[in-house]
Length: 339
Image 1 (cartoon, helix red, strand yellow):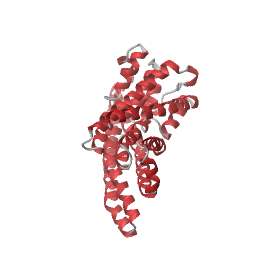
Image 2 (cartoon, rainbow, N blue to C red):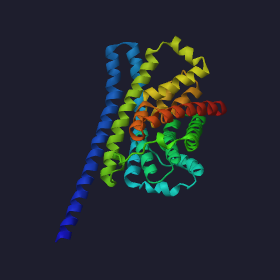
Image 3 (cartoon, helix red, strand yellow):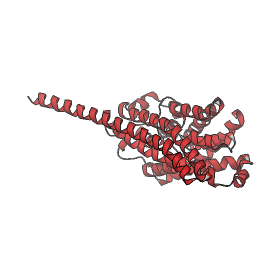
Image 4 (tube, helix red, strand yellow):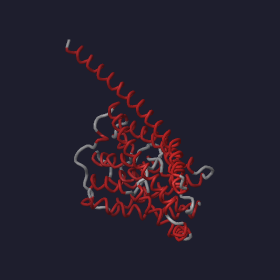
């Protein structure tokens, strides 16, 4: 009798979870359709009512970035939540070589086939370290997973149609940055700089449908907010900043690269959508826009905050600063080679 009650309770719990997943899926789809409708239909009408060319231009840029970026953002968060809920993290440990020098490039290359968002990469790296993975390899995966996964590369190809060299450049520069930073940490990193987390984070608690729904809700809402803010900031930057001031930076290859590399840190655009923001900055050189896409998924304000809370301030300051320098250097070298 007790076993029957337990089985009945398990079945009821499974049905409730399935119903919750269905409800969240329907509500999420309805909300997405509503947002796209408001942005694409009501927005232009509001701009026409205001009847100012700057407002109309701002809304055009904002709408283009948002509407193009949301589908890839949703796809990326679905894949990331599924991996976090259904793929045991011990799989990563078993696939990595024991030697750190070999584990770093393998972990970096794993980002090509294992999608993940910036928000999830930090707790995943902490979990890998606690389970015996070398910190250098875990950090290489932390940098590569949100930068070179399939969703990001496909989004980049859509944002830059007919420019496969931009996709290849992003892949090579991002992977090189991740591997170089892993090797640098293995060679120069100190144990006292890195504070390992003592408890599991929200991304690692449990698994199954409940974890999938929770991860999807968190990642999509959290990253979606950054996409909207980034799109608004990019549109404002394109409209408000005088062309004469832009010419000061666009006329100099070095200044344009540094400016967009700094903007990538401040704008905090999700990696699944930053290619659309970079494509909208058409006044800058291809190398500068490449630097924006390479730096953004590896060093931005939200990542620095997450790294500080997870690994400590000493680590975050040193690691973020070094990553920014290596990412800019890699972008310049790859841009000179391919673009």
